[in-house]
Length: 452
Image (cartoon, rainbow, N blue to C red; front, side, top):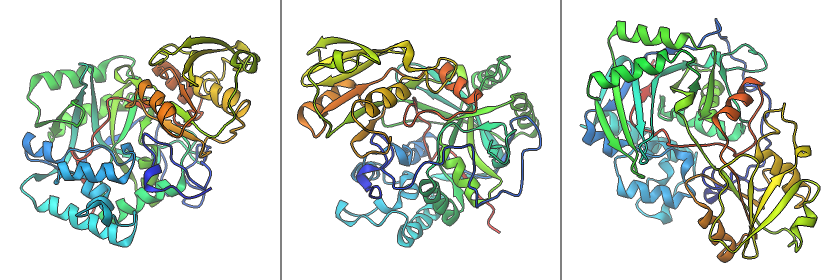
């Protein structure tokens, strides 16, 4: 299987990698960390050298989508063209070129050197200032009015749960592609900075953390506010007072675990380097929301009688030529082909309800539709394209009607309870099954690492 092209990067489309996922709770067997979690709690540490926008106007210039949310390099180039000071110039430096015909090789020495120069330019610009020894409070208000607020700072890499650290309190729930983690690690090492943020979720059973965060946000104006490209509003409060920092550290330390909701590879990159920390924000589980993560399928045999073909695994209902069908309830799946939408309902025999992974529709579909019917036994098969929640069912229908795909499969969003159950069972989510929305944005807090 070929290495991924720039048009196939992880994001709205599937990442096509040659090497397998590392699908156990491991860091990297040949990179053994020299430190381990000291206790069964979640730790957040102040950022020694935080590079932050000087005000809201600067934040609007710096803020950017994460590197892995783009479909191709041209989209990144377009974003930089519209926002020439944004941090994509550092996180995707190979796209910071005069024209789309001049892309650098991603991860090359030339691209990494360009990232270093671009970051130094931001440090020296009038857009940023340095803050020492700070945590931060970060709120995202989505365009629909949904609000989530979290505590940001450095998390301990030694608290990541692995085979060699089974009692770690930061639980990853996704397989790691070593080449992808290494690509991010190379950028971190060369720029000596953390720009991408890991989204972690804590349960906050007492509601103490959420209450304290909300009280702080209501008591004073944010240090800066910035809208993103889709209209979500991002607010940041910098915490420099030692007593305030200590209070929030104690509140977070009451949490027995944190679950990595987004950014597994960013945390893995820090572990790969042997770094003791990574940049993270800890949100409360009940404030997070997950959107659907759908699929497109190509180059498989056409089937005329779906009800008969799938009778062992699903009940099948034809919905006709409606414009779209996006399931919202667990154990309903949409299938579109030949101008017709079908509703598939998995039979009880298709999954073990005690196994939190098997009970997720993405896993049921992989086993009983893609494997049993289409013969696609590997989620990395190039016939599969994964489409994130920022594209709707009409988009998928159009890709079947007018594009290279023969089938669209729409899945209900994974519930937060399903996500938590998988983490509690120390299992991994099915590939490409959670699209957390709204997304954390890069550039609002950058951690400049020790310069020694």
